[in-house]
Every structure is written in structure tokens, then in C-alpha cells.
Amino acid sequence: MNILIAGLGALGTVHACLLKKAGHTVHALTRERYLDALRDRRVSVSGIWGNHEAVLDGVHASAEPLRNTTFDLIILTVKSFDTAQAIGQLRPLVVGDALVLCAQNGYGNYETVATSVGREHTLLARVIFGGKLHAPGKAEVTVIADSTRIGQPDRAVPQERIERIAAAIDAAGIPAAFAGNITAILWDKILYNAALNPLGAILECSYGRLADGPDTRAIMDQVIDEIFLVCQAHGIPLAWKTPEEYRTHFYARLVPPTAAHFPSMYYDMKACKRVEIDALNGAVVRLAREKGLPAPVNETIVRLVRTKAAICSGRP
Image 1 (cartoon, rainbow, N blue to C red):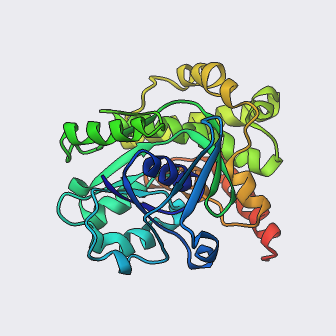
Image 2: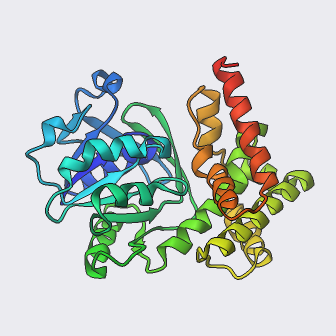
């Protein structure tokens, strides 16, 4: 396949390196300030999936040099707050049978991309492996909780095409599979991230420490309760019938393999970078307001994260 990776953070670098090493043609988009560090187009991956290196076919700061290139797949790995700007830049490249795969955290990315380029060009992925970016083009895979799941929420792309894409990603060494219920699976991750990521960033501790503390555990339980109420009000499908059923799975199956993990929000906040709270707990608050529902715990967490981020960056 001819593939474009939009965003060379940890997630994008892993996809770019392993897909190129697997024999695909791979270009990447990154910020202009990183071009000098990536002038040799060399990317590498270390960590739990072994050590890998590859030389990409191109690294660019804009889509303009790629206007005459036909892509089979564009994998969107930018932060959620950059989704609208990114798809605006990429829209001229989404022609013919090109598909855009939203492989990001949080709620709203698929909706933004599908509105811009059409549902028939848009796929959604739930990615639940974690990594660190040590330098431009140098990523480490630190943890994985499950395979990447890929689907089309509106069934606007033939299943066979999605299965072929998932198989290609899986064959490159990134565990992946088709999912017919991708919306429910994505919300599983939103539940996971909304409960763990902001508290881990605020309190500067690992997932396991959060689950072990009775006070933090009580806060996470309330986050989960509010999300279930919001999803029920909006008719959003979940894979779990009750919050109690989900929490049993969460504490017994999801947290233990990632107990030593710190959320990317923690690292972003330590580096005084913008954080993705608006696509997680912030999205829960917005959806709650649309239905006239209270979401006080999620709202408090959003305010705390924003305040800590402002303090870190020196903003008032």
C-alpha cells in the first residue's frame, strides 16, 4: 500500500517504521521544526516489540508536495485538538479510494474527519498500545492492553476493505483486527482513558497506583458512572450493560497489564504541552450538557487539568 502517516509522535512513528519495514511505501507529515532532525528520513522503534529501523519515502511539513501522490491509506495520529486543521490540509489527498484512519484518543475525531471527507473515506481505530517519543523519529513501545481494532461506525466502507487494511497493519507487527462494533470498542477506551489519564497527570502517578488508592478509585468509579449515564442518554452503544460490569473488567483485566504505565497526558503536562482533556472528560461534559445532565466529577477533573496545564505553561 501507499501510506501517509499524519503526525510523527510516538504512535505515528511506530506505524511509520513498522509499515515501511513491512514493505509499504510510507510518507509522513510532521511539524516543520522537526524536519532537520528527520532529514535522513530514518525512524526507529524500540521496546516490547523489539528494535526496528526504516527509512521513509518522504517526510514533509505540509501536504503540498504530495498533491500528485495517490494514497491508499492515510493514518491520522495527530492530537485530537489538531484533527480539524490536519484534515483540512489533507482533504485534497483524499481522492479515489483513499481512506483516512482516525487512530487517536477521545471522542469527536471520526465525526470531524467524516464531515470533511465523507464517511465513505473514513475509518475509526481503537488503539490501546502505549509508547514514548524519545526524539523525533525515535519511539519506544512500552505497553499494550489489546489489539488495535478497526471499523466503520456507519458501515460506509465494505468490510472486506477494512479487513485487508487491518491484516496489513497486523502483518507489520502491530496487532490489529476488524471490528464491526467499533463505536462501542472506542468508548471502552474513552472510559479507560477518562478514568486514568487525567488523574495520572494531575497526581503524577501510574495507573496501578490510581487503582490501589481508595480515594482515587472512588473518583474513577464516579467518572465511569457519569459516562454510562451520558452514553445511555445519547443512545451511544457500549460493550457493557452496567458500570459495575465494566468496572469489574477494568480493575481485573485492563489495569493490571498497564499498572506501571504513566499516561501520555502526564508526559505532555510535564513538557508544558497542550493536553487532550477536551476530547476525553471534556467531551463527556459537553455531551452531558446537551441532554441537561450533570457530570460534576468529569467537570471538576477538566478544571483541574486545565488549571495545572496553565500553571505549568505560566499562563494566568
